[in-house]
Length: 281
Length: 280
Image (cartoon, rainbow over the protein chains, first blue to last red):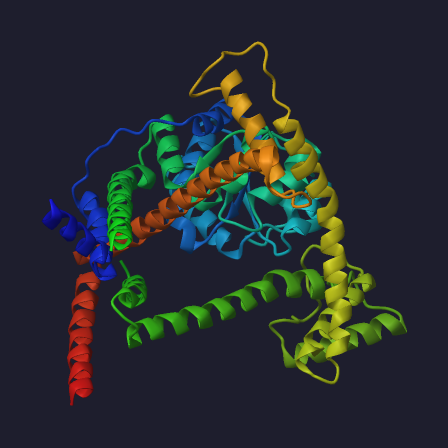
């Protein structure tokens, strides 16, 4: 028994590089050999799905892309899944970006979903308004008059020349608002400056780290559901019945979590054994 | 797959593995990746801000494409300044004005933010840096005014409404939906959590016991935050590994494998050399 405890104590002071290698293997192996673990949608993901499901053909959805390459693995799958859901229902999609990189993410998602998968027409089924710096000031501008902020879209076409922009002047003209957000400016600002004052139905997809910050708005009903990180994306993919990057990453995510939890438990046991021994002597 | 895409993949692999190499120890690969990242980020942000905001929204409003012939001494002088800038920087000030959908008449009110912006740039001069405060003061004032109402409405009133929970016409206990039990937890957690931050009274006796409950709620919240943070980091790691795996394919000429092998060899050589120097 004492030898076993000695082993645990020694293992507790393991070289951190060994831990890195173990985590790397825990992530990498399921990517090569998928386990096919089941994905069960949570209430908050189901809520987002239900809100989108209630939209009808011709309804207008405003999507805001506020993430970049650094958070792409978490947010991009949910943005793609949401686009699939909206465009499959023939909802008109309007895209803005509060982050400069968001425009590239939006272009990538639109090419994959709107162009290649559904063959939608730019300017009639979807429009990419593009990026404007200014954070909450931009949201305020969109609430009062879209054309004050965007005179041209991302391609340089005047808004008045785009068919689907006819009759769209303010945020309140939209039936649904979705913020794919990785931080500031993002979900919180959309709630504070658009969804709450205007009363437009809003859902969001955020990075895992933001979930705790945004969850109070979901609990209070200010936001209708939240897709939290890669699991949120995987859940949404399972809800729309189209597996994507989120689903393929969930096996690795689950295994890595088990390994991390095991390390935490192991480290704690080692700590308590050492503390007990130091008290003894 | 064209050459530029393959080259981009090789660069991405090098930078990714360069950053990862720090986990072994600080080394030149990490330094290169770090400096490239900082430099590219700064350049990218500056170019992006200039071409998406300053040029179209500021200069585009100050010197929009005029309708027809420019008449009047003032306008001619104004566009004379523009033409002078256009001679120096034709890409920023194209011939005939900037057409970004801001009408045809100059919006002279935008001279104010233009001036404030220039004043902010004076912060680099120790003699004139005080003038930068005007721009900063405007920005701070505007942000405070903009945020005050929004915070009050969404974070104070909205959250108070959200915390005003019901205890009737609902199940006693539910794991997935609303219930008396869940609402009780929200009520107790909110009140005890708020009381913990009340420092005008010493946390002793009954009050101390209540605030201790508040601490437990806060600890659960921090634990959840940490869990989500770990989940986020693992997601990003999965994203990088997914890219590395795809860049390790024949399509990209096994970029990941070649770069990884090369890095391991060089790091090993440097480590051995370093050890020899230390012992020699």
